[in-house]
Length: 425
Image 1 (cartoon, one colour):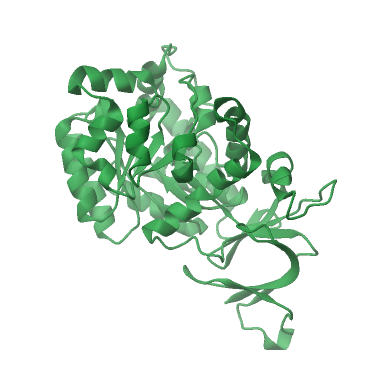
Image 2 (image 1 turned 90 degrees about the horizontal axis):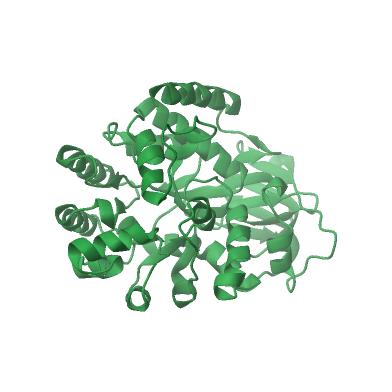
């Protein structure tokens, strides 16, 4: 199947070269695109081929999320916790750990489907997710994967393991991870954070990651409490602990947040192949602080931490904060926004090839050129301009409407699952 984009203003996502052209978009996980002078006539189209008249609209590579939590989807608008949190540890205990313990597979599926719809309608076609449901572990990752597949977006998944719910739950998490990765699905060995992960679980997780030739996906020094726990219990800081355990030797590892790091920890990360994910809006929401990432900028990407599904919004937020924390510029924030593609490619994971595209209905008030594209990226283009989205050569969103699932049906079911969850709270 080929989708022909007629009269597109194509922006090369790496060089910013702008071409008024026709595009031929091939289908498949590793397929590509070609700039074409001619569009075939109707009589020469294949049965599933499509021609979309872009009418000069901008077309560029779609977006990806480096760190997401689909399980937070049903939390939107939920009742306040019985005890109001006063610090980050209490936010986890009274809100997120209160929610994740009550999730079942039906709720997880509804969360994944709704989140996938929101992602793709915001131009996001690849999601790296970090999931937790300690009393609905078995089959949870395949449930999420199937939901993402139904909508049509690509993914790398993991289950968030910890020792906070006991040995039996810990072992179920290891088994779920092993089963999922053994099936050939792309993913990581997920851990919550150092302060909820004992020595045995950390060691077992690194063995499992090596077995499947992947990395860890873990929250690191999101709050000062993580560092205080590591120093009090292990006599070292979080990244030092992970390094001594061998986690920094796993180049596919993703360390989320990395806010409260010492110079030595930053140096350890700089000398490793580990990638870092910045989630600035979540950090501000949880009042845990913000950080600069200059020393590790070439391997820093952006995520949402489950706050929302809009990567353009995440980039703008990181840019505004980054001006104060590290003097960030247009070029750096765009590189950070796009670093996730380099990460995905470095892992050999399919689903993020050149045939992942977004059509933007952006009518700029000033000329958009190669030289000023980044100014339009930061101050102009946002999710409301996403008109159509192509994932792996398949049209998922056309004229702002999802084509692969019934959005109304999915969101109706999500609301029912939200009520079910809230009743349990």
